[in-house]
Amino acid sequence: MDFFDKLTKKATETYKGAAEKTSKIAKETKLKMKISENKSKIDELYKEIGKKVYQKHVTNDNNCVKDQIAEEIAKIENLSNEIEEFHNQILELSNAKTCVKCKETMDKEAKFCPKCGAEQPEIKEPEAKEVEVLDVDNEVSEESTENNTVENNTQEEE
Image (cartoon, rainbow, N blue to C red; front, side, top):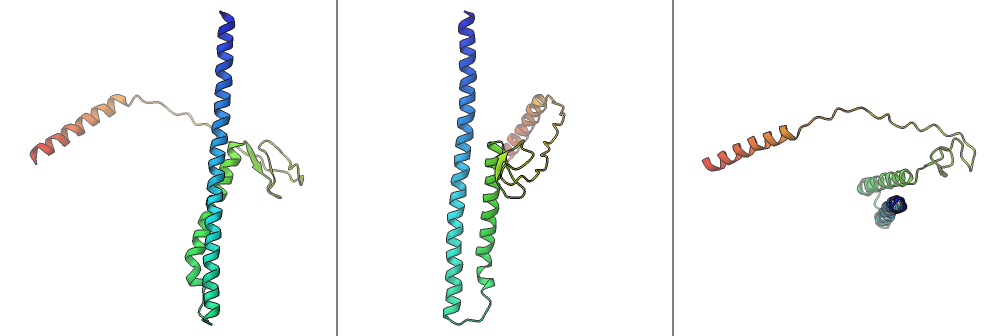
């Protein structure tokens, strides 16, 4: 009987590990797809900017084209910021970081970059805070009962 308990426990642990890895891979793949979509959107915006600049050139319009492309530039900046955030999320999922000097991806615990040898700043994890757990189930149910009573009375008056 002990053998089957150990076997069941080991199988459960293996399943949980595989499920966690699969979940991380799925999240990373979704983030990479979002990055690809944003890069495509940025390319389209570059084309729009190019068209507007060319049209200004063809018409010999000396007015500043900057005002006409400001919206596209703002969109590009937003998409670029999103891409950077997606990269950071991917690094977090894979327990990695980038070098402060050459931007090479490396293990989160590395003190020196394996590519350029630059010393890496220590990553400080936020300290866990103690929180007090309150039993608010009774309070919530009492409040919702009072609110329902008030709402029902209001509806009856109308």
